[in-house]
Image 1 (cartoon, rainbow, N blue to C red):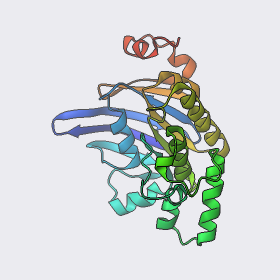
Image 2: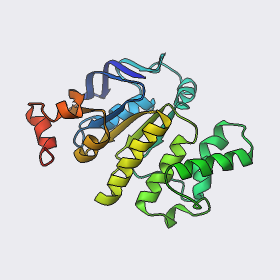
Image 3: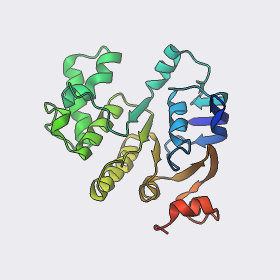
Length: 241
């Protein structure tokens, strides 16, 4: 589903990512971990097409996006859903209008059809009868759910999650983890989760990839990842194994 070939990204003379090679399978959930400034957020932005690599190729399915125009990348992005770190809901819009935003912008669906899709997607994330609420009336966990409902409204093949547990208490974090798992199983999507939370990563992922100082230093399934004999990996795993 996603392939990065020899991808590097420089900002001026600073290398944010160095020679990344990564393949993410169709239907897989990959957690990308790393500390602040490690390069994991830059990696996410590259895969979404928000920035272009300095070197290398990025493939989404059979389309290489690194040299595409903005218009061409926007068409590829219709295959993607994005759940932002702080939900990124429009404060001036109702929950229903937030979820409907992409459908209104990119389809010719009738208002009734859009209203039905919004209700269906909110139900899928465990929210009912909230369409007329405003974002400031929601808890942090509810905002994450609304953000996910908006992400899946278009029927994406890929969902990107940017720090989905950020700012949430442990109980709510666990509920969001379960929601990520159930969404993947229900919709058969490919999921990429950028996180610094190793407990969540081990819970939700098929594989874990670790970025350190701009390099991909480890990638494996969860059980094998826990056994990696690298002090940088062990530091991240400390306390959960």
